[in-house]
Image 1 (cartoon, rainbow, N blue to C red):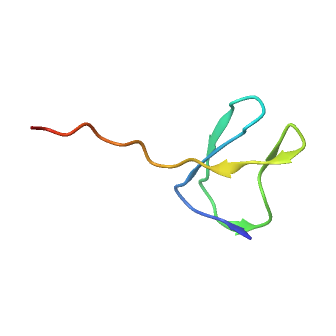
Image 2: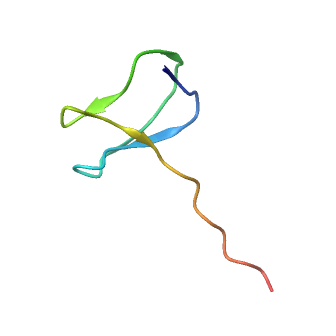
Amino acid sequence: MANQLGKRYTCSECGSSVLCTKTGEGVINCCEIEMEIQEPRKLPSSD
């Protein structure tokens, strides 16, 4: 799986996060496990 440019990856073990600045093949690892893409934060409604 290729890394996605501009996506933020987080470690489920220690909570570290990185921002991908270059695409490429492979995976981003931390604490010897694959990091997961961080989901976008939900914005509060402006009622």
